[in-house]
Image (cartoon, rainbow, N blue to C red; front, side):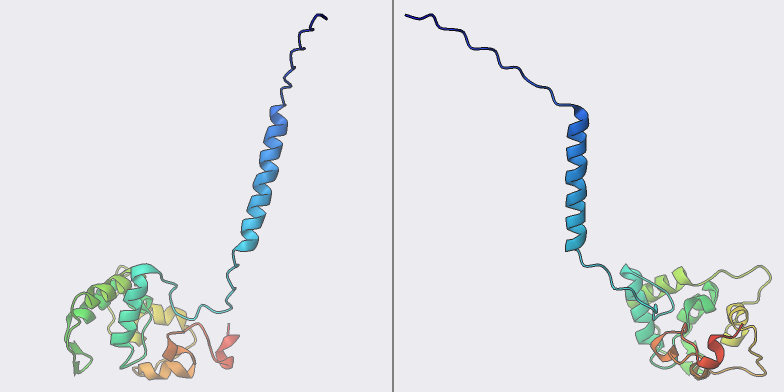
Amino acid sequence: MPKSVPPKPRRIRRRSPVILIGILLIWSLILGWGLAQAVEPPTPTTEIGTVDVVSGNLKLGQQAYLENCATCHIGIPPAAFPTQTWRDLLRDPQHYGATLTPLQDPARLLVWTYLRTFSRQVVEGERIPFRFGESKAFKILHPKVELTRSIPLSSCVSCHPGANQYNFRKLTAEWENSP
């Protein structure tokens, strides 16, 4: 009987960690590229369309503001008035000569949060404005507009054709390229 030869021990080859890291890197790149292809890219917008880009509960506040305020007149951008003006306007049932039913919670709280977030603070020494033409923000944004009298909000459309849709970024051709 022949003598059995013991099997040779298998030699275990150790792979280099560099190769393992390289394989993981390539796998990650392929997986990332595949996921990027699967996700639909956001469509770029050429125009924001509203005064402020808002999200979450602030979006609800903006919607409540427009539903309750912009149905009688053009919605004024919150930054046009300081926070103190908005606070007083929300509290007072006498609104520029008209008696209004004050907003009730939760709509009042939503509107107030939106207005407070996007309004500005009063600059030291500034008188709190209650007319849009008296607003420091109006004067800064409209340096070439000469006001001889109080301006009605309906006149905003003459320069901002999208003002009825709360879009003050779009201007008429006359003012589009104005320095």
